[in-house]
Image (cartoon, rainbow, N blue to C red; front, side):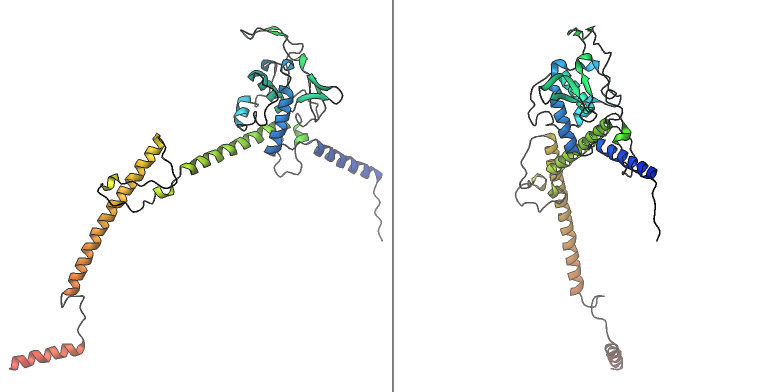
Length: 315
């Protein structure tokens, strides 16, 4: 019987490795699911937009070069800012600031004892607190937008203000060690990619829905034209269940369907002419005796015919 003795140092190193992996998994944020990511983003946005007088101006922020607020807003669902109804209405510039801070993991600070702290933002992951008044310009000319009295801090970099181990800043902490494809992106980059993918799929679904709405299967296979005094070019039967809509696209489809039906009607008439001529020729050939279609003579019939010719010559 062999007894394995493990060194305490090995056990300590193994325990430390498992602890580090567990800590990394606890810090990793679930941002790949669009529904969860959008719901959390809306909550952070509402927290920040409810304190507009304390938010910095948009020019006080220094965002990453790859973070395009205009593109992000186009990728959000159309009802992102309206459903559920927002707690308050704010100017668009302040809403852009709140959206930028929410995209980078910040939300409004709420103290369990005194309630909301309007001049402070916080990160729920690394527990960093951020005094917003330090980054807001003291006085700005509303007409020209020129800064008269600058803020105490030069600018606000919302990504660098997170602690070094925070996944909103640290791509290694956000990385999934069990993933087959190693993609080192910080949490805000993962969130931006999720919004981009979700917006693309939504646009494709809307385009396919519009194509199915205007799709008419009967247009490629015209039915039997109705009989009447009108010429074939004027005969057009609308498909059931499709309302008539005034517009260039509907008129083009109707004209194309009418031309298709007219073309098919002409082909049927030409085909019927060829069919009738072929039947008449076949009937004429069958009615003539001695033609190639009659029954071929047998050996006995040939002999009888030869004997009859000879007897006729002798006579």
